[in-house]
Amino acid sequence: MLDLITAPDFNRYDLSRAWAGCLPACPLQWFDQVDSTNNALKRQAQSSTAVSRQWYAAAASAQTAGRGRQGRSWTSAAGRSICCSLMYLPDQSAADLSALTLIAGLACCEILQTSVPGLSGLGLKWPNDLMIGKQKLGGILCETGFSQGKVHHLVIGFGINVNQLSFPPDLADRACSLLSVTGQPADPNILAAACAQKITTMTSRYLAGGADFEPFRNAYKQHCLLLQQPVEVQISGEQVARGLAVDIASDGSLVLACKRESGASTRQTIRFGEAHIGKLP
Image (cartoon, rainbow, N blue to C red; front, side, top):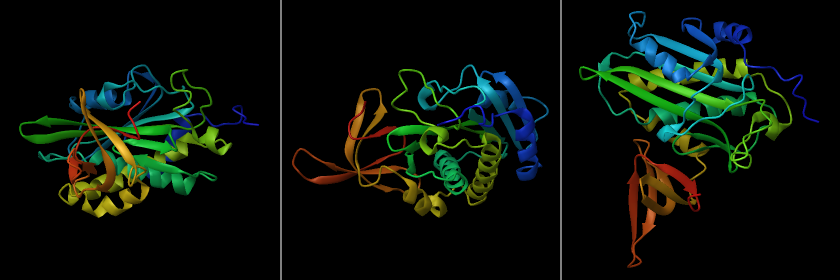
């Protein structure tokens, strides 16, 4: 029987201890409740306390306005899920950093696969979702701020359902947690610190390499659930692309093999969009 009483909660004290062992040079803000951890760091980015080429972090037990991509709300149970964001002030020329979302997702996926006993079927749904089968376990939200032609700040938010067993009715069949799929509680504090350490390491490597996704491409493809599957991608508004997902390009784009009305095959490269296996819900 699943036992929530013994499940560790996401809290300031245990997270601080885990954080000190993984990222001692990255200042961490804790909130019992905040609109969103991404917003908290974006506010800090505009303050005089933010220093260039430094990592910062924020975590919360509960968010009142958590968000996913395209402005969608992100629902999480207070203390039962990881709500965490990282910020870096790179002070470098503006560049295409769209693959950062993929890299952060890959980092979290690799940590969970090696740290959570009994976890199977975990993969990445391009561009930003952590999935187990057709159910969402977590997600990534990256936001970039620019100033005077330079990247002023990068914010990488990650949310993971850890010891949550109940979800809103509209998400009940589309969401899961580590506890619900493994039957065993996990420590969100240790996992959050480990994911944050992996994200900062991989992001620093990505930036040092000139924002080149190629070194991460094969690893991402190994975890990508869309490849060799028929997919539909909502690009914008009513614009939808349909085809077989055949590759992740060197810049992180999704590559579809599409059929024209004439029967000829063509390839379409998609940089942004919401992808689903089969038909859009």
